[in-house]
Amino acid sequence: MATTALEHELKEMIIETLELEDVTPDDIDPEEPLFVEGLGLDSIDALELGLALQKRYGITLESEAESSRQHFANLKSLASLVESRRQK
Amino acid sequence: MTPVSSNPNHWSRIRETGTAGGVRTMVWIRRKLGRLPFQIMLALVIVYYYIAHGLHRRASHTYLTRLWRHLHGEAPQHLTWLSLRHFRSFGQSLMDKIDAWSGIPPALSFEGDTREQFRQAVMSGRGGIMFVSHVGNMEICTAMSDMQDDFRATLLMHTRNASQFDEVLARSTHRENPPEIIEVSEITPSTAMKLGQRIAEGGFVVIAADRVPISDSGRARTLPFLGHPARFPEGPFWLASLLRCPVYTIGCFREATSYRIDFDHFDDTSDLSRRDRSAWIDSAMQRYVDWLTRQCEKTPLQWFNFFPFWLDCADAHADADTHHDAYRHDDPEDERSIS
Image (spheres, rainbow over the protein chains, first blue to last red):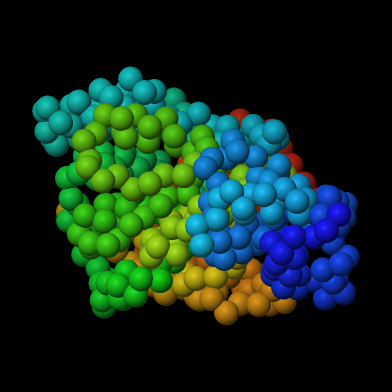
């Protein structure tokens, strides 16, 4: 399955924000979990990623109930979040 | 699900003194009968609490003894009297909170040239984080939005922290623009994003960094405070490092008839790199504890953490008191989520 432009942009953002030195965009599987397995990111990384999304796309999540775990599950879910909520 | 602290003496487990009905009665007396009847009533309530609430009394005794040893090299001579005054000072702060939330502007004065610093911080439009503590009356800080236009505060509070009192107050008062309160049990990406947005809009996020998170899995670390080990939360410092913004400290202390504001620049994390973050948190936590110590030195009776603050409180109480409570110190080793 082809990677969309937004997915590629997000991959680069993740690598840059989290300074993942040995990772290239191709290493990130859009369907693979970002946290614990997959890239092995932790809760601090999640906060940082959230802030990067906020800064770059002006996204905020409505409430705590709206599970950020779900949006942050993998690159695909992240891309659909950005697509539907981006302010800039 | 966030595991809630299993330590029975964790501050969040200690029921807020005063029921909703009691608070409402006091608000009513204050409003309808005025300050003097309120103060007489308050004095009676304080003596009652001092006698009835052993946990708070012992917490006060431990704190006062440790502060006096730190300041004067010896324990206070009239501990009971001093502790009653400590309780009274807390009661007074509740009354001031009622005023502040009622929209009655407190008389404020800034220490030294801090007024200008504060004004500049607000006018810069960069927003920031303000570390506060439970020394003095941080609610007064939020009332500053009434005197400095453009000052917008967002209070980040732990769920269950003093919430009964504050909820009752918020519902029974008439302030037009109360500060925004965000209650969390742990800091999630969605909280961080919301805070990031507030700061981007030039607002200030107010966080108390002297109470450890409700969840046992929250990150906290032990630092010496007044010569004894105490737990401090890492969460506020992680947030400060991640939000990349100016960081300030603000204290608000009662003097005879007014409040003195002590506002100071603490740091700026705008250019803090990931690599330096951990070292920054080490240094920032130590600097915060130093600041907290200075606040206590300046206003000894305005310490409003009436729960066993130190890890070795049980020992202190065993020395000071005839009855000994068994304190448990859960000390999770692997702390991965922050709050």
